[in-house]
Length: 272
Image (spheres, rainbow, N blue to C red):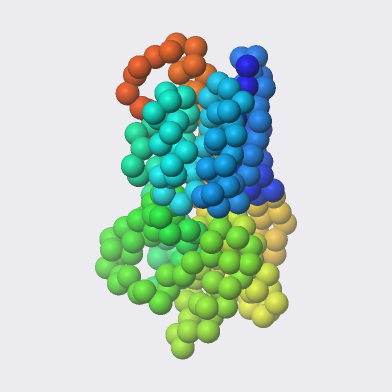
């Protein structure tokens, strides 16, 4: 028995931990796992999903690229091959999903920055179309609106969920005539890139620029000052997703699709 796990990038500690949780749950039930990386490439995603079902895989956990509407995912639905979306979901495919409370986490982070007195808060978003990106942007907008602050388009930048993307996004924000006084980076890889640029420019955190990351980083507490983060629970997410998939496989059940939201916590440290 085997299940396939398709994530965007296993070198991202978030996905590595998520896969570990899924693997532990699978092994408890006597299933092995096959892990693939999509690199946020829809064609690669399609290729791997097809390769996995040709291997007669029992089911899949999928972190979909962009909006999760790839032809191969549609094919899984047609073929009745059980799968669960992890971390992100599809807008057009009704399926089980185990996700973080993205709106709540982004709202808490933005609200905290507002409470610290910031009015110009830059946000670094991931990939257009991804539900994770959209939900985190929604939380940011909700906090601004509640505080009576306008949404300023020049403060919304994109980092593609990549280290270099985060760095370029910060360059863009800091080159504005009126740069932000705080930055909310919506994933760990982009945060790392952002911090590389901020450190190189020797900008003092949080005196000149406050920063919050969605996702913890292994070294976040060692950073000077320690980084304020929205803590996710990737291990729990992976474990719960695998459990849900195994439940589908064993019960052969026809329950309507379930959406499970894993709570997040704002961990306040020194960068704000």
